[in-house]
Picture 1 (cartoon, rainbow, N blue to C red):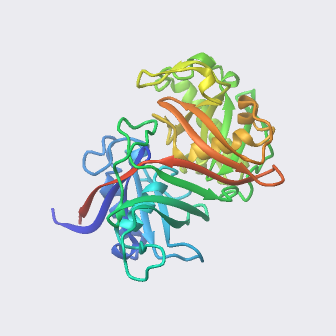
Picture 2: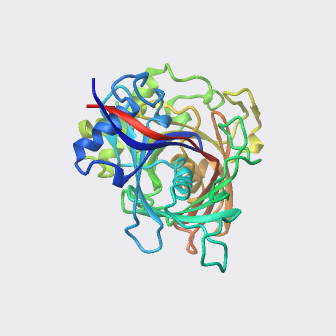
Picture 3: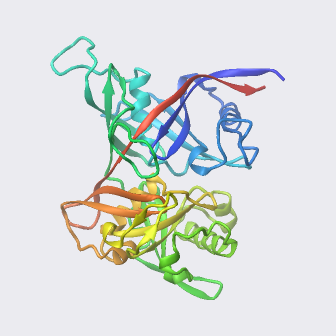
Length: 386
């Protein structure tokens, strides 16, 4: 079988990994690009053994970088969630973890010039360089403080991030005015709304921060809060219920026109179970005390419980925890505060700390930020079957 090649780099950002392409290296026609994305990760097999995926939603991702289209941005980028065992290419949502890697890629590929202050000639800066990227999926500017060394993104450091065993250099990610990117407002259905599924009533909150998320309490779906972090991956009845809720809210918010269409668009909205803080043990065996966190949560991504918690979900949940009247806010007990707050989210593999600042009127989000680590894993030619 003959193959063709395309330049590609593989980056990890946070707890996600993806294929990175420059738009200039990709075919202009849609089918040609889809062929590269599907084969590059191997969307056809559940194991993704014939490509660079690894059978999980957080490693089956693609990012395409291109020149900026808006003032103040160094680059534009588009994120794609790729199916596992199915030919799905979904650009409706975005990835909060790979945002850090976008900044690293922009610097490593020379798409931004790192100049020392007051110098016109190129001089590599040590420390941080701020890359501003425009995310086309949600129409938002992302401010990325990238650690650099010798003119390239830095890998080694002492910052310890939950979900990763080894520390690394700290990348500072802030999403500016993050609300309403997909649904037009942060609270498209108000702080809460009622939903009836199989003759049972649920209260849910739909929050559109980075990606739209649907939140339910553990209690409302019959999950003991103290057992939220036990292995629920085989609970198909629970997963089916959550998928029904997700699809119904997709239709109610106008993301899709029918339940069938919602089933075929699994990337967003995402759905998560939340609860007030409880003591629990992480998947890595670390004991977390309830006074160490402000809220605990478990999310579903692409039909499966997430191993940790998606970066986009951490941004969303932290913001929701501060917005008065939402289900996450009720679980966290936060009062309205227009100053910057750090929200401590307990997830299956640890604690994530997210920076959030409300707008001056206390009704929306000014910015939401998260610290990550990132690294370039490999770069070269990706081979695709003809």
